[in-house]
Image (tube, rainbow, N blue to C red; front, side):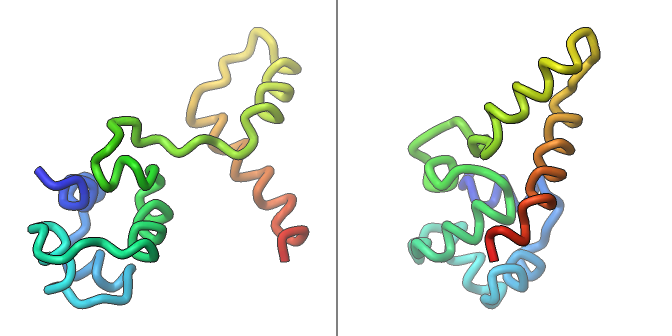
Length: 108
């Protein structure tokens, strides 16, 4: 199965819904999924943001779909302060979102 279609179905999106997220018609999604039209660099970038996967995963050159976390070192440092506590992947993700929110103004 095409990676794009796999990601779309896994995220319970229709071709039309994904098309709206990418600002393209449903027919374009069908063409991407069937290999009639190649994904542009810009479209691949948008897909990585929508599905939170690597571009290499989308185009099929890697099976590692998880994007590297921006704040691994910082999160590991924080985690050390919570030694003995259960810091699950979900909690790590929440910490990452919190850090993103804290520094959102710095990026503008």
